[in-house]
Image (cartoon, rainbow, N blue to C red; front, side, top):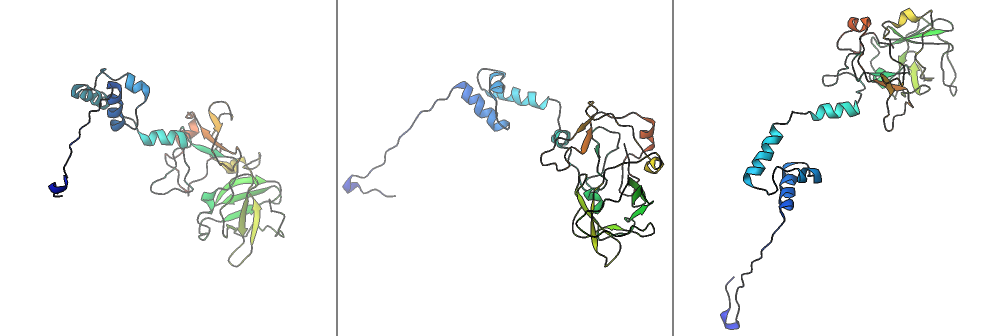
Length: 262
């Protein structure tokens, strides 16, 4: 703005000098070039002074480092499970490192299309023990059908096609609740999610069966997952399996494929 010289207005030009240490210069450079400098990175900088040449030398050393993958790091530590296969998430081979296994019979994946029962029906055969099949494949054997006690039971009919029904996915733990319906307009009945089990008379229904290492042996471990409601009933394979049956399984498993047991 214009000055009023009559009252003595004027401008004052002030300057300051600011010096930072060489360590601070290196730290500032590394903070801009990385996700944040550590004390070790500052101490191991190629030179004790930051110059154009030393900065270029450090950048070139980073370019020369072997490439890494954020996705591989993420998958190794999280191993998130999609509730169903789709174009982005397709299950890997059951014998490969990182495959997941469970003790309970029904998962959320089984209930994600409860409105579409075509090819996804449940049948119950036998008069005790009962063989429960889903989508044409045996899933487990139970001595008594696992009704939840709070509702009246219905008589199991081997000729009837049942379905996973209604408003909720199966709870993913042994004893979790899922709902079964005998047909359109029929009441949904609560059922307990049974453990996977086959006796000597029904083992042939459970093919293929992969010989898994013992839990806790270092080859198969309980998934230590925060907020995992399965209470130690889900497992992860830490070492790949080299067994004849592994070569008989498809490289990619789809929903319509027979379930793989261990």
